[in-house]
Image (cartoon, rainbow, N blue to C red; front, side, top):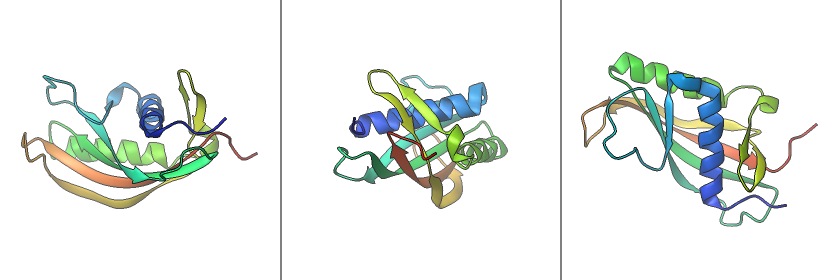
Length: 140
């Protein structure tokens, strides 16, 4: 088994964060849904990573925009994502349909948090970037 292509790594990260932060923050990959109304949300955008995904482990960078009705809510959502990505390695895994389980052994913030407003909507937004390692196995 090898790691899935890029689209599945973002699905793995979205599935993990969705489970880790629960209903308090909606998690979306690549774009917000059409007609999206401002609420607590995290938008995951892939920034790039290894060109070869036919290996058991790869590392990719993601920008994560966290939204909230107020700046304090956006900051709280960013902290929820930060906390979820910095939990113990054994707890970080996501089951992807047709692929199996993808593990996230390490994730660390490489940029941010940057507080501002979304340029298109003026919604309060906090932006951070993370390097995330994906693996088809977990160290014992």
